[in-house]
Length: 385
Image (cartoon, rainbow, N blue to C red; front, top):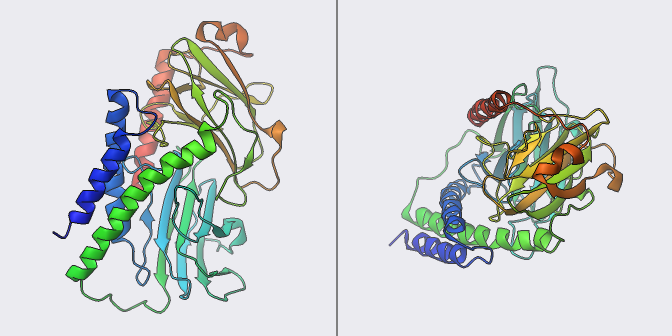
């Protein structure tokens, strides 16, 4: 049967989820099976877009295809490449905080982060007055808006990062291979479909194994309820720093994360589940950028991670997750960050927040609902962009 490899892969992925070390009850499994559904969707999409002769940009992750602690503030796109061909990316720059490009040498594995062969943001691209641009990638290329493809280049990843969800607008992107423009691909065959189902099978089981191992390697070995100093993101962009950790909190506890506002065009924080994916960022405030956060008079942002409503604007909702991941990101930096730029963490009782947190200020229920309504509207508009 043509689809049998993918059927087998779904069964294998379901087994891995059921046996995951962090699973403690039915709710963990329910979320795991929902994560599996997103993996099925994404694997099919990625396999059917696996075309290095006639490539196109595909949304790598979204609200229903989450993976790899996806950033709620980012639209991710990817296209497959050959290292011996030339590709042309045309587009129009939107008004987002950051637009970056990265060439990877392959997919994630349980033990390796893919090599970043080229990484840059649009500051290295000549963009026209109307926001349009053209970038060329290929072996041996050099000069303005031309970037070489090193041996092993396999994927182009593009990230479009929003800081102000309501005000910023996405741009436009297109990719084509220089020597296939104006011609059509060969007709679809059963052999092609069989290869695609086989590729989808490998993608599905690979991503389930990979990101469970990735989280354990980079997060769970850290002391609980702490965050690392800012550091270059492993396998990430040259101008992206991150601070990571994992939390475990009782019902009456809150984690207070204090971090200075930086001069980075993008600075944000998010929570993630033990499946190493973002929590619901559309209907709950599980992430915040600087424009979304309340900044205290001393130039610090004080986030409060808790299950119980602490009544503050910078509440990050646990949404029933007593364990999970925390990540801060700074992007489009022009200088290195130090420990002084990073977060301080304190665990306190929720009831003690008014006397433990400087500049404590309550927010009313109506104002909170306005914040959530704005998130819902902005997420819907961005996902259609």
